[in-house]
Image 1 (spheres, rainbow, N blue to C red):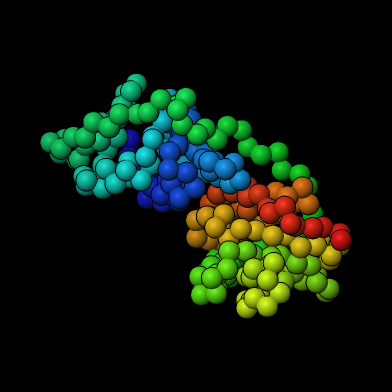
Image 2 (cartoon, rainbow, N blue to C red):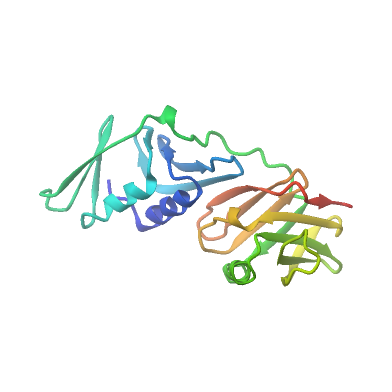
Length: 225
């Protein structure tokens, strides 16, 4: 088996969420953060014959780079990674899945109270603003005329410098304030459809490849108040 470039990109992204991973049998890959506040799910082109665990996903991805166009031959307890000639081989042992953080089932996402789109360009601007201003919060607040204001700030500092963008949003009410920890926005680059529930959970779906993230909101979020 050879992993596609897309799958390697997804695994690299998942490594930023959790350094270890349990890959299930089939073609669906999931990961969950240690704090259980980020869950990600991807459907990939490859189909894995059995479950296996990797303790250090970044290390595993680094090992793949040691050979050109690596071919993976999976065994019960390890995988043989070889080049096209078969002369270079790496034996990489799996980890006990009971010792790793297993994502389990998908989140039962409640009906989204607010729906909006976040483009790759806007997400990049928000991340850049957070870095420049030294903030770690992103607020999504309802305003009139079917718009939401997305703001990078520190919400408990009334004199904090802020960066805001207004974007279209769909909601039954416009009195809401959803608070994200920007460090939890670990999505792969792309344009996203966003559903946010007043139950303090959100779902972000990549428009291109269907990659999904469920991200918890901060408890300071409000809806209809």
